[in-house]
Length: 112
Image 1 (cartoon, rainbow, N blue to C red):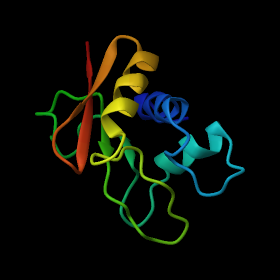
Image 2: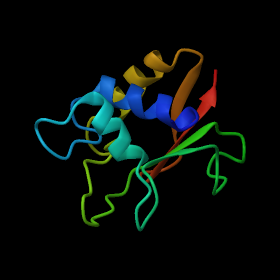
Image 3: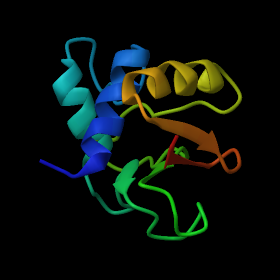
């Protein structure tokens, strides 16, 4: 089991039917695992702030650009679509943490 990234991935899939989906039959657990899978371009949801998008203080980083490699899934948030609503709902699931957008390609999770 991943660290905090797993909690974030589960919150995202509970907040919307889109994130992590590869097929219509994917369970929430499978969708969360799809977001955590580290392929050629890394995971969609990572523990901590590995590239310091959150100034080094984020507990998790959410990458929102489609990867396009084999076995890819639906991206976790859509900045130009319903991403803000999904992030708000997922933040409710996270309790004392919230999702903040850095730009159209990256969001980070901070303690409230």
